[in-house]
Structures are given as C-alpha cells and as structure tokens.
Length: 371
Ligand code: TYF
Ligand code: FE
Image 1: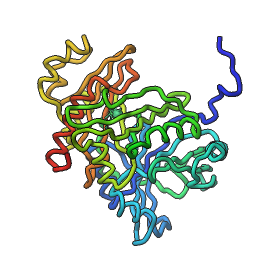
Image 2: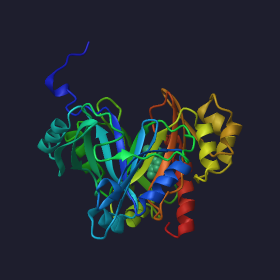
Image 3: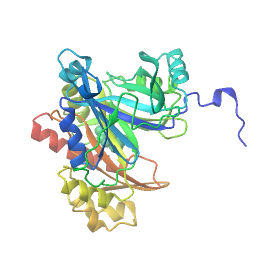
Image 4: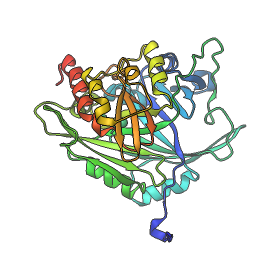
C-alpha cells in the first residue's frame, strides 16, 4: 500500500495538451495545409474582422489535437521577429490544468522564467485563465484553465466555418509526445528544469551509443508529467564524424526548439495511406528492414507486406509493440517534422528503429548538403 506524503504530491497536475501554437509566415495557407494534407477541420479564427489588428490566427482541430496558426498583420511584431529568426515553428505548448494561477505560481517559485502572468479572459461563452513560462529556446508553456468555457476555442476567437471544404479526418487522435532539440551540453539543464519546475520525472535515457550511426550521434532523455499524459523527450547533439540532425536543426532554427510532434492513431496503416494520398512525404528505410522485421519484433497483428510499401516502422518493448513513421520536415527550413505513432501496449519510443531512422535522416541531410 502506498502512503501519500507531502513530497509525493504531484504539484503540477496536467490534464493533457490543450493546443499547440505555431508562428508561421502565412497562417491562412498553413491552416489550409493542415486541413488538406493532415485532415484537420476549421475551428476558430481571430483577425481584423474580430478587432485583432496586429495578429491573425486560424485554429484547426482533429479529435483532441488543436493547432493554432498565427501570423503578423504588420511589421515589427514579436511574432514577426520570431519568424524572421526561426522560420515557421512551434511557439506555444499549451497545457490544460485545473488552476492556471496555481501552476504559474508554483513554477515561478521553483525557478521558471516568466512569460505571461495569469490573465482571465471572458466572453459570453464563459471564462478562461491563462498564464505562461519559458522553456528551452523561445518555446513557452501556457497553462490553460477552462473554467466553464463553452465557446469554440478561447475568448477573442469566433467560429471559423468553411462549409465548402472540410476534408475527412485521417485518424489523428491526440499528441503522444513532443520533442525538443537543445544545444550541446544543455540536455541535463532542461531535464532538471522539468523535474524541479514542473514536477516531471525522467522515464528514459538514450546515450550516444543507443542513438548513433557510423557518422552521427545524439543523446536523449524523456521527461514525463506525474500522470504520464505529457511526455517531452529532449535531444542534445553528440560528437560524431559528421553533423547530426540535431546540429542541422539548431543551425537552421537558429536556436533550440521543437523538433517533432508525435501524434497517435489507432490505425496507422489507414492513417498513413490517407496522408500519403494527400501529399504528405515520409522518410523511408531500406527494404531490407522488412526482411528481418519478424525476426526482430516477433509476431504482430499487422501484415508486414502492408507496412513495407508505406515505410511504417515497428519496435517492441516489455509491454508490447509500437508502429511509427516520420514525415519529412514540413516547412521551408529543415527543422520541424511529425511522427505518426500507434501504440499496442508499448510505452517506449522506438529505440530499435533509431539506427535505421537516423540513417534515413542522414540521406535527407546528404541531399541538402548539410551532413
Ligand atoms: O521521440 C523519440 O524519441 C522517437 C525517436 O531526432 C527519435 O521518435 C528521437 C530523436 C530524433 C528523431 C526520432
Ligand atoms: Fe518521437
């Protein structure tokens, strides 16, 4: 029997990911891309028509995943500066909490850097409290407390209805994990930040021997919130013969930031087939990967001959297995990409695929002349 003592208390209970906000140079077109290619639907809008004179945001949704695409309407804004430096990328990971004031106060007390004091926003649909702290690079976590709110998204947004164009969803369900790339020597600093400021625990660690090919290497530690609903792996480059994908990211993003967002599906074959048909491009491992797959992971429910043409990867741990695949980078700069993941019991991250995956990433780097 476990005894609850003060120190065991999860001081930062998080219910899940509330939304992800991207700063992009053309929110209107980005929103259309997430609808047409990734199967999101129109949800909410804020811009000139709603009295927002500096920034325009489009919100799209698929099951539990909400993406906010934000662009400046004039020069000189913070959003514009962010885009000028980093290109398109993730600015905000919004975390759904019961008390955004408490979460902010706890985080600040434990050493977090302030981004946004708790503010209450209201409209005829209710009330939302938000607050925010900085994470690595210029990424921020916004705590969202949705009191009794029943509007489309947040106060200030109106419904964005597009009766003539709402593509079918592709089966994306929720954010499984979100990975950050940090600078050389900084991984343990951010591990400590998530432990001390957010009450997270480290659930996994990969060193440069786990994650290396003949040419490149990286290290990674996975941080998890107390209830496991939020998982943030953190990567750091490791010395290798050639420039690793993390170094390439840091160079092109001009700093630390979000490297990939893993989204869960419960039918990866169907989801990936749909995504490919809509023009999403995926990394590929050599065909020989599939020749030895059964030997490596044992029997699985899926037909390996259905996975092979799609390039879906499989890995097993003590608890079960997982299927995963990675898109190519999705904006002008070779920075952020998506992972599609289906878990069949496994709680790990696909260590058995690291080598094949990183070799596939190196082939992309080679084509860009950045290896
Ligand atoms: O999130 C993970 O740990 C896996 C594997 O640069 C991974 O998706 C790790 C690092 C990386 C790409 C994928
Ligand atoms: Fe991942």
